Every structure is written in structure tokens, then in C-alpha cells.
Image (cartoon, rainbow, N blue to C red; front, side, top):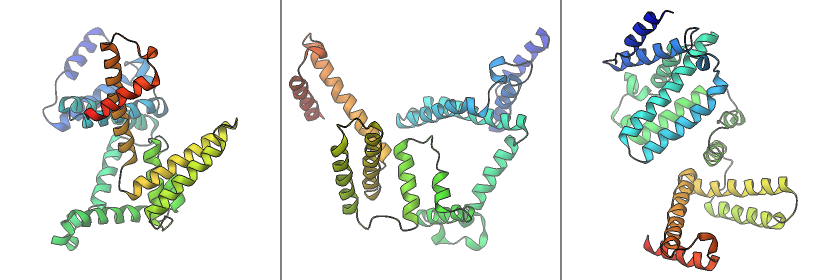
Length: 281
């Protein structure tokens, strides 16, 4: 392309869309050009696999913005997330396996299928529009979609890239759906104690693989307790991590106010400050 053609293309791409559809077409056209022979050398060599880490990163950045209740940041991060989805759609188009149109039509069909209580007259009744009924119907329709799959297959399809606590929770719920579960949370607590004992028996050995396995068993059993208590284990651990950082920050601030380095303080001194931080919350 000539310099003049590039300049004209840039001017065209610089025009903001006035509707969501126009804005979607604008960003899609930009990415499609970047993937072309006249586009960017980096973009042209990307694959679904090479872009995978960016999709993961953008997902977490969206979640951070939601947690921070920062609308401006959320707007920006949703744009980055959508950008990744469009990249993958266009890569599918380049490979001939699917395209953005098929991606969007497929999810639209799925939403219609999973909402019979909204879109199909014979299913529309006052009771069907309650939240509980809507959730039950949603799960029923998902099960119909997966009716030919075994429970093990459904577990295996839970993405391995999910945070481990979240993935464990989802796996346990698949087992619960067919009755493979404790009868009472007390049984889940007992399992935590059992796994703790097993870890204590081998923690000071040189068998690192066995130690890894037992730590995993302990964490999995703790997720079981959280599930029984209707607590999101990922959210619970994230909350505690944030609490730890706040309290540790108090210790560091107090040490600085005394003109001291943390490395010069004893554990007892830091523990006393830790208790002060707890008392202030």
C-alpha cells in the first residue's frame, strides 16, 4: 500500500462508531487489517495458543475493575477483553474453522434455547419468571445440551486454566449432581482433619511429590467445606489475602515510624504489631 492509502485508511479507522454495531465493525476492520499482509508483523504470526495468556490476563483485569467498582477502568478493560475475543474470531476465520458471525449466532442461539420461560409462549407463566425458577430452567437446559456426555466428561471440560480453587469447586458440584457427596458439612470438616493429619505425617520427608499431593488433598477438602457453607472459596481466599496485606502494611508502617527495618525486628515484635492491626479493624 502507498503512504497515501495508509493515511486514508487511518483516517477511516479513526472515525468512532455512532452505534454499538458500527463500533464493533470499526474494531473488527482494524484487527482484520493488522492481520493482513499490509498489517503488523507481530499480529500476523499470532495463534489461538499464543494469545491464550492475554485472554487470561484480560479476564482478571476485568474482574479487578469490577471489584474496585471503577466504571472507567471497567469500560477500558471490557474493551481489551472484547479485543481478544475478536482476535480469536478472526483467527478462526483465517483458518476456515469458524468466524465472528458463527460465533455470535451460536451464542445467540444458546441464549434463546436456555430461556424457554421467556421466549416460548407455552412456557410463559407468572411463576416461571421468578429468579429461582429461572435458575432451575437455565440448569435444565444446560443439562439437555450435555445429556449425551458422562459426568466425567463434564468434569474434564471444566477449563484447567481456571483458578484451582474455582475449578475444584466446579468439579465437586458435578459430583454432587449425581449424589457423590457428603451427607453433612460435619463429614466435610472431618475430611479436613483427616487430610491435615496425613500431611503432618509426611511433611518433613524428602518425598516432595507426596507432600504436593497431600497439600492438594487438604486444599480440596477445604473447598468442600466452603461449598457446603455456600462460600465461594476463591472469594474467601482473596479476601483473606487482602486482609493480610493490610495488616502487614501496618507492621511496616509502624516499623518505619520507629526508624527500623523489618529485618531488624523480632517475630514477637511483629506479632504484637499484627495484633494491633487486627484490633484496629
